[in-house]
Length: 558
Image 1 (cartoon, rainbow, N blue to C red):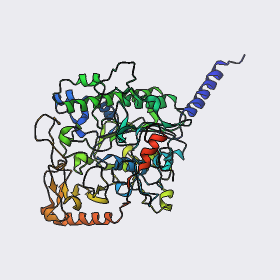
Image 2 (image 1 turned 120 degrees about the vertical axis):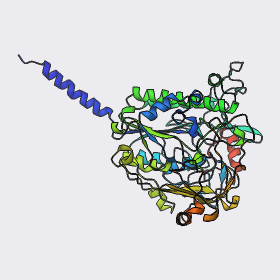
Image 3 (image 1 turned 90 degrees about the horizontal axis):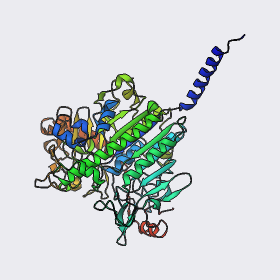
Image 4 (image 1 turned 180 degrees about the vertical axis):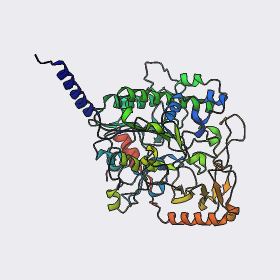
């Protein structure tokens, strides 16, 4: 009599291997989590030396994730939203894609490639690149890299689905931003294989607001970030784990307006400053949402074969008397400035593909937001070269593959230089020409103020641990200035490794180094991409009203 039991075991084992192989995607999953205006001092692991501040800054999930992966201590982005996002999506330093934070309604009919807000039409986005390797690609949340034409829509950039908004921000309760004919316009869009249009079905009742979160008359009143987080969870829940996933979660939190469900406000009632209380409440909610997503990634078996990236798009906003609530202590400055507080941001990587020996470590080599493009391409085993941009004579990518550094294959970074972008615009979010506003080479950082702003660099200040607070004077955009001219005698040069707070100006005492770095800035300035983005186009309002039920959307159909 033949003993069948061992044979059955062999068959079951073989079947397990077959099913296991089917559930393993050809390339690792990539989850990119982008926080908005998230200050250096607003995450728990940067507050560990002060127990009082740990009560204010409660981010246990983010802290644990950092500990389970690699802290990126010197991670750099652009000083404002749209340029940072343009650089992440395209793998380019902002000086080669977009340095303007203008609204997405602008057009310049004389330039059908670059005459719009955000990413030029003929640049390949990271999602389109990964889709070539059969990744399923999703984006949830803030877009902010173009709206005018069908080529600026996430669909053209390679995303299979999107739920989010086009502008820099919108109201968390009404989902509105800007006005047409004195009437607020909604900004919430949904796109998938069966639908592409304004997300009117999420619209709240007219009285729903930060001050009226439980309106009468059975009005719907749902916080926007709850809708976005639920979309992220839904994508993960439905994803076929045998297929590689690219999920770009572009959170609204913690960008202004300072709005958050009341239970989180109450949780921080011990903070006596309204703006700081709201900001830390928003940070705590963000942390909670990240925890939910990570738990589901683990439950579905995605986490074990994933690279998970978390970072901010720029530093926390500290201007306007603290109205925005951000804090980058002990770094100088914040959003809208090229001091460390504006461009050096919270960042870490985690996930199952991080080698065990790298878990719990800190990398102090330079990495930038535009380096993810080549890094993801390497993980997906695809050439990152952008043929479409090359054929249109657009700048190529500046991205450097950081996976050998992150994986421990190399202990040195391929990047020892960061070109710092700027604009000639006189005010935040205004148009202007592309400038090189500084450079980091090895341990040194040189900053130059724009000539159009009399070489002034604003926010020359360190706020203190508890900012904003109830003291005066307030910090307004044109206060706390430092002149940083293109000459050593009046220049601004710092050793940011020995002096990360940029207090000791070395320019007058190190003229040779200053002039050497200045020469590199002058060389980089010759390569900038600086199209005229245009002015607000009346068609944006007309089509929002006539076609999209008072929602912003594509308006220039070329």
